[in-house]
Amino acid sequence: QVQLVESGGGLVQPGGSLRLSCAASGFRFNWYAMSWYRQAPGKERELVASITTGGGTTNYADSVKGRFTISRDNAKNAVYLQMNTLKPEDTALYYCHARNPISPQYNYWGQGTQVTVSS
Image 1: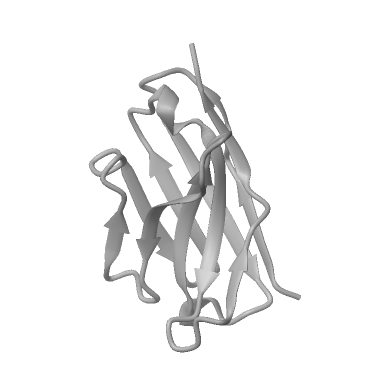
Image 2 (image 1 turned 135 degrees about the vertical axis):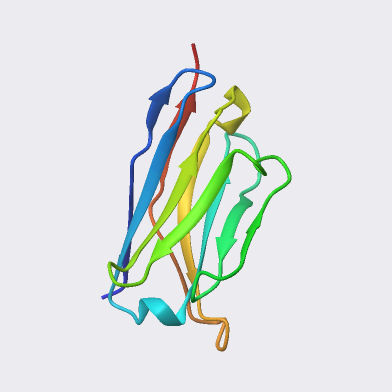
């Protein structure tokens, strides 16, 4: 059974930091590119950051470049999102996503973890 379980969300003040984690199971993790998406109320889901299967290449949305860092640990079947200098506009439900780059029809979503940036 495929599972992606996010954790680490919460309430943080502007300028603060959070580290999101996503624990994967039920599929060959190191075969899958991993991404973090977010969706704010009333807005479409957007790609925040992605990382290739081996972790050698990362990409970020312009809005988070220089503040967020995506990483993965294939030995632990986990992907992380370090978020620094958080802003109120970062408030959203953050989702973990797995995609097989060879067979993209195989892709999975987590349930999301809420991040709220507010004073």
